[in-house]
Length: 282
Image (cartoon, rainbow, N blue to C red; front, side):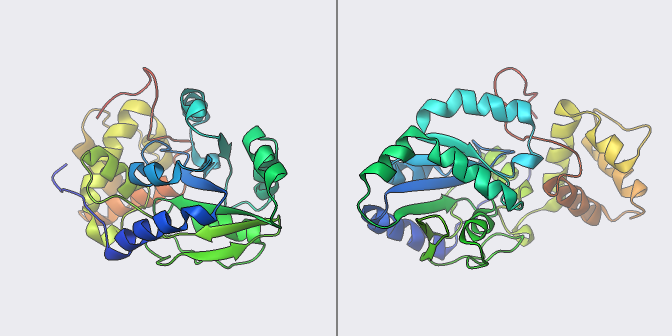
């Protein structure tokens, strides 16, 4: 990668301070992550703050992730949280499935049993664009939390009452001040967690091509119907994709198309975080 990726606008620093102040008001926390990269999209700085209360990790966009890698992640990390739950925030029917998972959890059952207030209060956190606000809106039964298919839409903390005796404290999508590992920043950028205009789309596309060539070798050729696809040369592969899309030498547009196709699941069930011996490093 040639570009050093960093993005930590002022409202994020302000929100981190406010979360520390609000923890005494909540009963538990929900950290929403992208199921395609559940390790990458956890915020290590926030986890240190919210761990004073029970934390449930919610793997969102489960319908886009490689189920083999999701299972490996859950098995590896199930003892680190009060529970690991799965959902797809774009499908309202799965809201009930999420609630079933939550209510069947022994830690949540104890919280409900010992709660003397009318509602349990939960802090909802996540990195940008993991689907946090859409998730909240489904449980609220109406569009209260602001949503958009881009990061940085929510800028303030506010309370939202749901239909299920739960009150959520919604928060802006939060990153951390500096990415020490640029591969983490690259993955978050590919997933849409950093504003596109701050990123070099061709750098992201070349990383994604290399990753897919090694770990899902038929995904790109199948999507773009390329019969002779170069598997060991990302630059040649990007040129083939650009030509197949009829974009001539417009590699930037081809790169953005590739990234958008990945974000919307058009390559199939793909995970960016691998566990065990499966992953072939870029």
